[in-house]
Structure formats: structure tokens, C-alpha cells
Image 1 (cartoon, one colour):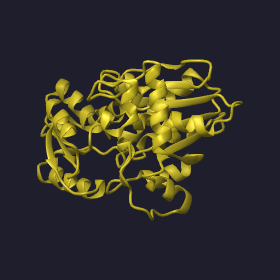
Image 2 (image 1 turned 90 degrees about the vertical axis):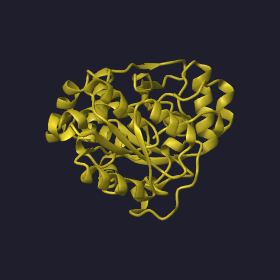
Image 3 (image 1 turned 135 degrees about the horizontal axis):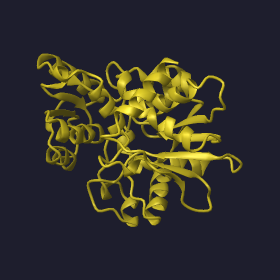
Image 4 (image 1 turned 120 degrees about the vertical axis):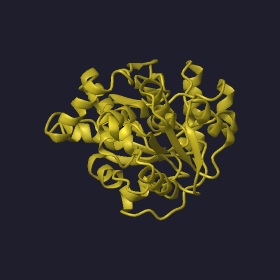
Length: 318
């Protein structure tokens, strides 16, 4: 019952920053979409960031907050800082695109360039936080963050207790871990299958789930909010193996096609946010009642249906 208690506490704690999002169908396909792209900060990350921020004392966060991110976690913390008057330091990879850095800076973050991998950058970020007595916030290494994003599972269960399967995009793995934790903690109540979705070009958590180890280097992908390896200190690898029913792969082409379909319906998401829908289109059983989490909006450019035909048409975030 510990996780349920913490998730319920998070649900009562975060509404000043994160809203309850719609869960609805768009057309005759029948799939139900959880619309985290409608969060004011642009993605589901605001749930975890807010819960992490609000579960520590005011003195612990007074000096500022530090994270490693290429967009969504940093943007979420910037939204929080606007209300709580604290500084935000975001560590990004050396190959982070200039537009992403500029977007974080406009949102109020101080950006630090560090390392070629999320693992290396997260080590630098942790060291910086410790040296300056700042709060470190991780989307894949903090229980408070996981309990915050797990409130999505709580809302899904309240809105539709008869779901058969839920498709969840996986980047760092925290969202899938959080949603899976919630349903696993229900203990005996009818539970849907929780299926994580990774890009076939960046698949570390898929490999760990199925083989117990990571053996390939992540490659660039149109779904760059899903790219890269886990952070240093990540707790999500073993959690995902325990609470997920499966992790599947989709191609960049399938992701972009899914994003284009959503765009044609007026839903403008970053490509990686459409990975769950791509998995639904490829793998779903027509007899299943299916939920798909749309994790984040396209937030740094004007997006049209045609934009999704090329990766450079839109900047995306993790």
C-alpha cells in the first residue's frame, strides 16, 4: 500500500502546477488518448517535477534546483520556479541543438553544457547540485518524481477501470515505471497490460527488459525525446522489468506517421509523444479497450501536418 499512499498524496499535492488531463477518443478507431500534451508546461513531466519539488523543505530548495534534460524536465522546473522564485540549472548534452538551449534559456533556466551522454551529464549535474547545496531532480532516479507521474495511472483508472492495455512511450523510463507502479499496487483489482514503447533506433530499456543488459549504443532518432541511455543512479530499469507487461519497438517512420495522423486531427505533439499511438497502430488487438498516453506537445515551432515528414521540422524535448 506504500506506493498507493504516496501516489494519492502526490495527486493532492500537485494540482497547483499540474492539471487533470482529458482521456477521450478522437474517432472511430476507438483508442482513448490521455492528453498530457495539454499540460501548461507542455508535458507530463510537470507532475513529477512538482511532486519532487514540493516534498522537500523550503530550505532544501531555496538555493535552486538542478536537472539533466534537453527540454521537458527543464521546462517543467522553469514553470515551477515562476511561482516559487527559485533558480533552475539544466545540464544538457554537448550536441544539444541551439534552438533547444535557447528555448530553455527563454524559460528562465541557466543552461550548462556537459558530456556526450545523459549518464555523463547527470553525474556532472549531481556534482554541481551537491557543491552548491541545490536540489537535484531526476525523472528516472527520484521516487518522488515517479510517484508524481504515477498520478496519470490513478486518473486513467478512475476514468476507465475497464482498460485492457495502455501504451506508454519510454525515453528515460520514468513514466512507464510510475504508471506500472500504480497498477501493480492495486493488488488483485483488474489491471490492464502496461506496454512500454521505444524507438528501434534508441532501445536501451527495451534491451534491459528483455535481455537483462544494455548492449547497443543509442542512435539518433526522429523521436529524440526518447533517445539516449538511462541517467546515473536510475532506479527505473528494475522497476520497469517488474511492473510492465512488455516493451515493444516502433520505427521512426511509424512514429512520424502516427504524429502526422494526430496533426491531421489538430493534435500537435512532438514525435516521441506519438510513439504510443504508433505502437497501437502496429500491435493493437481490435478487441482490446486501449489507452495511449500522449506525453508532450510540440512546443518550439509552428507545426503542420507536413512538418512531421522530416525530423528537422520540429524541435522536441526530454
